[in-house]
Image (cartoon, rainbow, N blue to C red; front, top):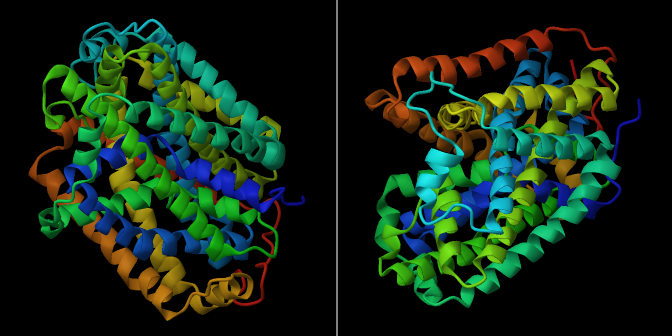
Length: 501
């Protein structure tokens, strides 16, 4: 079976940027910048980008391109005993992150329609948690399925299915060529509109004013590295699969730098819009920025709707904002599905269209748990365990397997033979020692915090049965799938060098 390829380098860049840019670029980066020294946060942020983000992106692109395969196939070509690692990442991302991420996109779609008549009323906090989600008191109290969210989830999964069903060129590449320019236009509209609001300049000042004293705090640097790792979709298996669709001659290092800087530039751009709106809100209510800023979900579904209700033409602004979130989320969601679909096709030579249909139906069914009244609580626990433990462990093992077990100079020769920017011993040092060290520090810090106090004040039973066991179940599935024989014997690497087992 001939391997699919991107129609153009531009198509690949749009798709990779679409995967990297997601909801976290819009709400998490801005909050971290505010919390960790404003403009001063850019120092650890770009340090993390240069010493971990770009080196790891080059690593994932090169291994997918040189080994010509999805994450499981690429690791299988490195050594039979490492195939499970590729499967673990694509399985817990597909049947973990994708399930709840699609539900968050469904919320965005709901709020897009609610924006036209500002249906959240005067108290968006009460509306979101008590009326829209109707959050239960504990993860064990499922309550009812929230039908408005369920209906929107159907729409999101139909969109996911339609895009991935059409394949690499006519589906993912074409969709991202439409969605990425649309996302940029919507974002620019929001930012310029926000900058015209009264109080916007105060918000921008708070966003950018550097507090260099914050840089002495270790957690500032740890959060910078965490943000870079997650925002570039590292450890997801996505970038490995996407790189495997590139032609023989492709500039890996240039593409990695372009995609990394576009992603970070987008985060910086949206920060202006976010804090301009928060500045307007603070002035309108006679409060300080600290009293109106919210972290994560609260920023998008509580703080922003409140600001939207206060501004002239707020209903249209709200519609553009939530459409922007929906597009950003959808471009990331389809990349997760493709990483899993690519792996299944590589191993079992399955029919793409039947497989995508089955996976989409299964994803929708699995996601319904997050549409229940306990959905937000399940989402919070599973997201914590997957992003703080699963992805970090995959990142550490990725560096160990490729940096120490695989013959890294083979990969460097491959990169340098086709790339304009050459990598040398410094890149090898980052992959072998520095990046796994930083990821280990993040992992250790999370474990220490976990044992000091259970995450989110949930009970240990809920954390173990929902969070830990979700990860363990996906690990068992990964080991089971990796033990199955390949329908087609994996081919050798694209370049001569270390061969597959």
